[in-house]
Image (tube, rainbow, N blue to C red; front, top):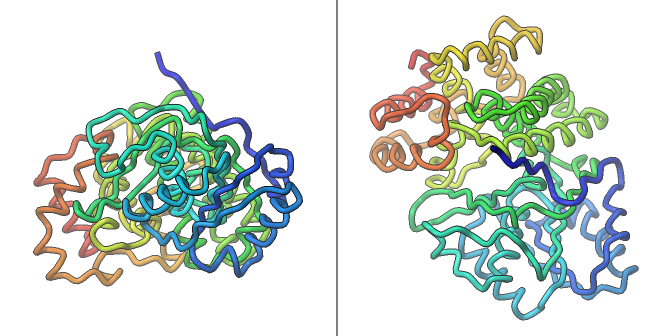
Length: 378
C-alpha cells in the first residue's frame, strides 16, 4: 500500500497568478525571501500591494541566502514568535521557500531544529497557512514535503521531511522567472531534470509518478535551452515542468546525485542545481549497470530522440555552459582530497540510501574521484 500526495490545496499557474493571493483569507502575513532579486524585479512590491489591499499586517524576513542554515531558520522562528502570523509566504528561489517551510513548522511546535535527528516531525500545520511563490524553475519545493537545510557543524545539507512542509498553495507565476540570470536558469533547470530522472529510475516508482517524471524529462529537454536563451514561452513551460518533477519525486525519492550534491554543497556552499548537473551523467553511468535502470534510460533516450540519454545530458550541460567536473568548477584539489573521507561518508547519506544500485564506501570514493577529474570510466 502506498499513499500519494502531489501537492497541497491548489497549484495556480499562468502569468500574474500571484493575484490569486487576493482570494485567500489572512490577517497577519510573514514573508520569507532572499536578498535583492525579489525587490529589484518588483515581485515584493506586487505582493505588498495585494496584501495592503487585503488590509493585512505584514512582516518581511529577508536575506535568506543559498543553502539556508539552521541559524537562519532559528532567527526566523524567533521573529515569528514576536509577530504571530496566521499565514507564511515563501517567495523567491528554493532556498527562502525551504527556509520558510522549516520556520513555519518549528514556530508552530516550538521545536529546536538542531535537535530533530532521529525524531518524527509533526505532520500537520494548524496555526498557519503556507503559500509558496517560486521565482526559479528547479527545486519543486512549492509542492514537496521536504525542507533542505544546511547543518554547518556537520558540513552537510539535510532534507528534513514532513507532510506539514507541503505548501497549501503553490503559485507558478511565470512573470517572476523572467528576471532570472542565465546561469540560474541553467542550474535550476538541471536541478529539475535531475529530480525527474532520479525519480524515474528509482525502484519505488509507481504508475502515477512515472507519467509525471517522464513528462517532465521530455518537457525540460524540449524547452530548457530555449528558456536559457530568453524565450518567455519556454520559461513558462519549464516553470510548470519543474513543478511536475517536484510532484513526482516527492512520492518516490531521488538517488545518488542528490546524496553527493548535498554533501558537496554543505561542504563548499555551492549551488545545489549546479552540483546536480555535474553529478548526473556520472551517477547515471554507474546506475546503468542495473538492467532495469538501463532499460529506463534507453526509453528516455528514445523519448527525446537520442541514441544515448547520458550523452544527451552531457551535451545539455555543455549547451548551458555548466562545468563537466568538480575540478572545472573550481573546487580546490588539495582540500577536496584532504576531506575525501568525510565527503564520501556524507555522500552515502540522504537520497543515496534509495539509489537504485547500492553503493559501498569504496565505490562512492571512486565515483567522487571520477566526478572531480571528469572521468566517465567509473
